Length: 223
Image (cartoon, rainbow, N blue to C red; front, top):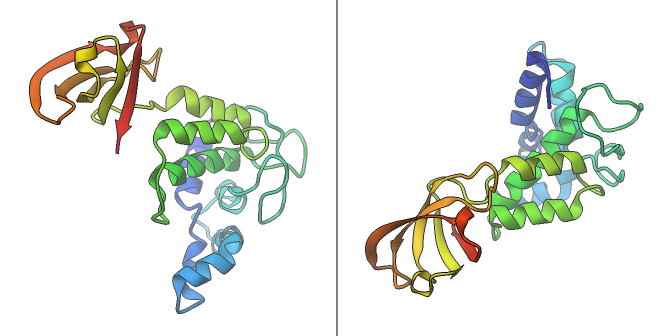
């Protein structure tokens, strides 16, 4: 999406500050975890109140903070705005009362980050599973155009990550471990990998494989 430089800055800063309201939640009780559970849906409003009169934060950034949990079907919080499921090509919405475009982007990015990193300490998802979850909820919760763009730009197997070959045309390499050496921009799920260990995790002579050239290949990301 083509935004002006000020819009990009507002998107970055608003996304950076999007959970600032949780500071207030943590200060409202002796038990931050208990406070977080009971007041969680108030953190966008607290963030808005903290920032709305700041001379260093623009109205666009304040709205990213205030609306990053609003959903396309109107079931989000704290206002209950609905989305239009349109590409956020402009920060100005077509209809009044709909989710701010930059907030829709922050919503998808935050959801992906929470699924993969999970700051609450529960089980995490692989990038592939996280994207699958976002796609499943696209259109209803998340802006489907933004989810589609995320799917196009996020590599399922990042460079340097450890992988295991669960299914591969060469049986001798099945179950072996390696690292992602290079991303294939045309096929993000088919990177160039270097196999470095056997399935018993013993070092072997490195083997470079361009998985995009293989008909039969299934990789597993090792977290």
